Length: 218
Image 1 (cartoon, helix red, strand yellow):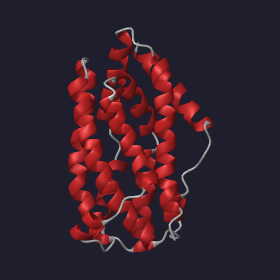
Image 2 (image 1 turned 135 degrees about the vertical axis):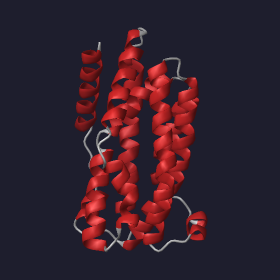
Image 3 (image 1 turned 90 degrees about the vertical axis):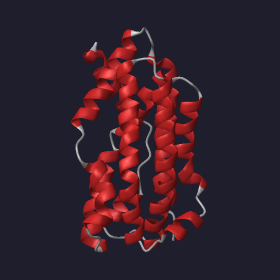
Image 4 (image 1 turned 180 degrees about the vertical axis):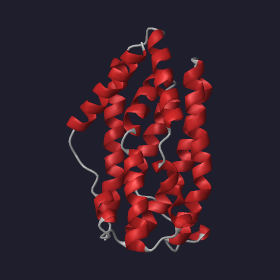
């Protein structure tokens, strides 16, 4: 059954790649061409996203009838909590004060992603949410590793300023294994992934919208 879960994840991730579209912001950061305005917006938008996702993952954990699934969502929520303090250091490195972050007006194209994660939690179907979220986790760590390296090389950020991205760039084999076990146990209940596939595609599109909204800032 674990093989079935792994194969399912691989198939869905391959489908998402076939959707097309690309993240235009990360290459700009990697080359040092992203504007300071884009970096400040990234910090302020992520501040809202982390708060929202933290609550959504806790909600999904509470809804999950499968122990491994509940543990997975709780662990992901815990990671969001740990990341929040590191995000404050990134915002500070971008020149933002806490008052600046609080006063920032979020962009619709950036907040569609966390709004949809929240909707997945409110829909009350943690099984569909599990597959959609696992399928879309794959690229996040790579993005963060690229950003962390570029912030040091091109923007002069110190370790504290990069810690948010370092945190997510670190391999998380325990979390990966738990996610696969959760999906395995969910499949064993007789759940089928058909209803989760549209959610996975929407979540992928909203993530690209987030990055590309920031890439279009002057």
